[in-house]
Image (cartoon, rainbow, N blue to C red):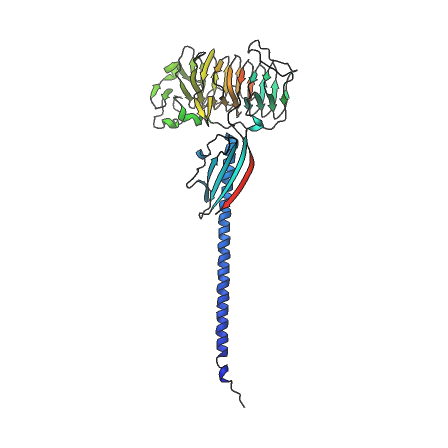
Length: 446
């Protein structure tokens, strides 16, 4: 006998099947939502991490600029403080720098990822100059002194990123410093004073510090002063015109322009305005009997040789000499103040090659000017009195623009055979190069 299902059991299988399908559907949707949520979280994490690492790159860039150029460097001349920022990969970063105190820098770097995610990193650094002072003379190489140099003042330090050899009767009011060795004669309590004048005080034993940490010589290019030049000394047929004179035609003869582009003189191979003459071996030369108006003189793709006196005691000439090539001085006593500035500091001389002071009694009357050579620096004879600092980048010497080098190839980074004085007051702010010590850091991810 066949047993029929009870009426209340009819459709149970269908209900069970539908319920199972609904349950599986809900479970599948839940898994999809969980998966999408995880994907979104992962994507957001990747984007914010990308923005974070871009912000870190911006912070490192800013720190590097301060280390290389000093605490007064304008970071935003390189890295924008707002807007789209500086491109980095498929993102970008902006940097803002504040000074909570004179010797601290707070750097805020915002990284922006490719999809617009942002991350902010803020760090505070203690700022100081290498070794506690920038030094009256800092040379990225060897120093050879065979004259009677006096380095005095609160910043009376001479430092070599290399070896130092001393002979003669010298004095550094603070100390001598080198990353390598210092070779010197038996200590003498004071320089002889017969030429340069006796110092008020002298150490019985000179302070000589070998095996010291290297100091960074600032990387200054003559082209940083193009916009400040009052007079451009341009040789015939240069490769291009200086950027402020980009609308001027390439001259067929050696020509002097003022900063407006007006031609002061041409055909200067035979002598011209102010007593300047150009020749292809020495560059631009100005001889005795010539006159120089106040201003910044720029030897474009050429060198400058000054063989004339200028200024007078009590009436110094406000002047700076900048050249893509070498700069040399050979004359009687000349008195001057510096005109050119860079990163808030005054520069008396900036040479893309060598600087040679040979028999010239240069006397600058301001307390903290900079004399800068990208190749080598030599004080040979005379009794120059230089107030401020001497920086020598010490690039490999050689021929520039088909001209003869002022100092022969492979000489020491800095040398002297005369009786010069370098008087260096302590800089009011760290300059040229700096060390940074991290004292605070935080991150904000958006």
